[in-house]
Amino acid sequence: MPPQNGYPVNSARSDESEDSEPLIENDAVHPQCCSVRLSLSVLMFFGFAVVYALRVNLSVAMVAMVNTTDPTPAENSSTSQACPVPQGTDNTTDPFLQLEGIPQYLWDSETQGWLLGAFFFGYLCTEIPGGYLSGHYGGSIFLGLGVLGTAVLTLLTPLAAQMGSRWLFALRALEGFGEGVTFPAMMAMWARWAPPLERSRLMTLSGSGANFGAFVALPLTGYICQTLGWPAVFYIFGASGCVWSVFWFIFVSDDPRTHRRISKEERDYIINAIGPQGTGHGWSLPLLPMLMSVPLWAIIITQMCSNWSYYTLFTSLPTYMNIILHFDLKSNGFLSALPYLGAWLFSMLSGVVADLLIERKVFSVTVVRKLFTLAGSLPAAAFLVAVNYVGCSHILTVVFLTLSTTIGGATAPGVFINQIDIAPRYAGFLLGITNTFGTIPGVVAPIVTGYFTEDHSLAGWRNVFWLAAGINIAGAVIYTLFGSGKMQPWAITEEERAEAEKKRSSSVSA
Image (cartoon, rainbow, N blue to C red; front, side, top):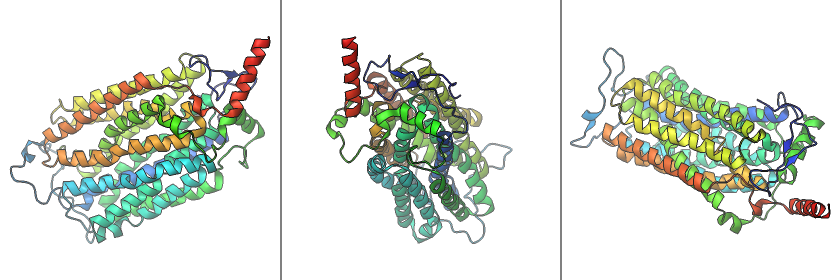
């Protein structure tokens, strides 16, 4: 819900106390409906929907690409401990029968784990450089090229798989290399486009495209695999990324000052609301103060912990649905998608509520960020633990996994946008740092899951869920103790310091 005209605009500066942030009283809020900044958020939403579709498609397609989940099971395997096939259904544990002429491969669970994690090896390499360059030059070119490059590489997936698992690993790593710049570029753009009172809703709307993309891609991938064959998955999603990039390059600008279709009223509102923080940070960075910043380390550690459970389910849930619950590919795709539908809706709702709490001064920015982080992390961990106590109940397992990811969406207006609070001008670079650390679970979690579940037993999957829940809780506790929504001293510009000093002098004189 956009604020009504006449509400004061929150200044980008926060060198006063956390609970009494300064306001610009003479600027009315420009309506958000039909605005350029809202259009930018919607276009970003679809961009990240494509980005996550390109990521998650392999998780479901993997079921169709392999002709057995483990061609050489170990002796004394405890597979018999897994859940029985539900009676009266067509579900089966038989290998997926692909259309005639479509290849399948002999990849064991360990190989599959490495392939599912390969994307993140490349993803780790470009987030910090992407954030730095986006903060200096602007983020639109980096976000657009990141999606376009990943989409083009996705078109080559069937060829790489045919050449061997090592080639596919390398291709997925290259896709991650190209996509690593996208989220830092998004943050750098919002540092110039998002008025402080609208940050939560604009950024959660654009970022929620990731969950929406996963929601659409998971069942659609299963359907395409069974009707057209798994290679078609990568051709269709790759082409969609190429189409989106055309619209992006035509309609988007780095800065409201250079946008060709923005109204003067909206441009002035955005520039005045953000202030000096809405400009590039130049080539130099306060690296040592950043390194010593406790609030920044709180974001880093918490995002790593939260991402562990997210990436565990993101990459391995379709396998769990197939091996343990024995859902067929169509049911697998649909049920694996349900958590992301909930997270998409819940994150957008949380963003609106967070902005309202800040706008109406119910809580400070710091309290709001911590509140939503706790509200998303603790119940999500509890539902992961609950999965371990429902045995082979298909309904309860699906319900608890769906609720875990759904409620986890509340962290979107919490720790996941906190970089722009503590240092708006450096937000893209900081997101590159935090996302680099936050991507480490994307590399490690699928591999750990593969080792835990090598025998396809319920006991192995219980270890997976217990570990994810414990790490999630630890992150929430750390952020509650050390997180902050106050702009850090090293992020304040000289212009802002001079203006603050001028105000202090005027107050003393008066």
